[in-house]
Image 1 (spheres, rainbow, N blue to C red):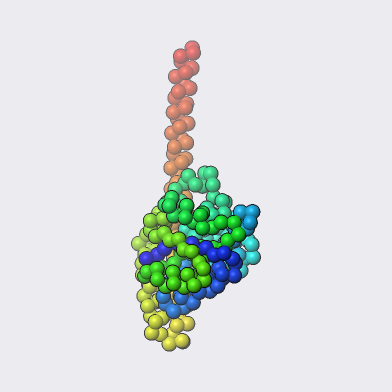
Image 2: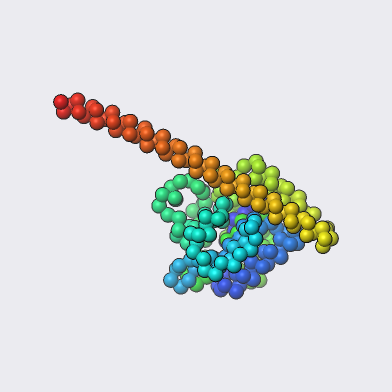
Length: 237
């Protein structure tokens, strides 16, 4: 299943080692990493991104402001990073972009204390064993949520079909030669980008529908206000 995971570490070096381990697990065909960001919360509680690994490739960010990064992330990783960093508040929190369970977000907040560094990732895994065993040895503490439960509004049949194709390609890695692995990994990268674009499109479609509904409500309220004002004038006449 596709899960959203947050792995917290006591320091940046452990988190970077954990990030490399996830890449290694993916190269073996054990998991698929769709998006991955390393965020660091300093002793003052300020959060910044130090590394990002998306369908476009790995980027070292060196303390990039979260707001800049979130705009490039279409999926739930960006939303959760925004919540962690406190950059998504007010009106945005009322737009139903996500449905993270309260117990999940509370666990994330409790583990990501000032001075800690965390990996926020969206991955496909057949079960938790591969990631849990690898991260335990590095001192990582893991919190999980199923993406369908947390982010169902932006998952459709096309996204699931792409994920199935990725799973098929990942299974081939187990018995492939080194030359074949390179081609398979290229195909997986292309499929990841296709998935990313589909989710981005779903997000934009959702925003457009939401804006249209809000405009309709505003028009209705204006009409009701105009009617009430008309009635008031008649009463005052």
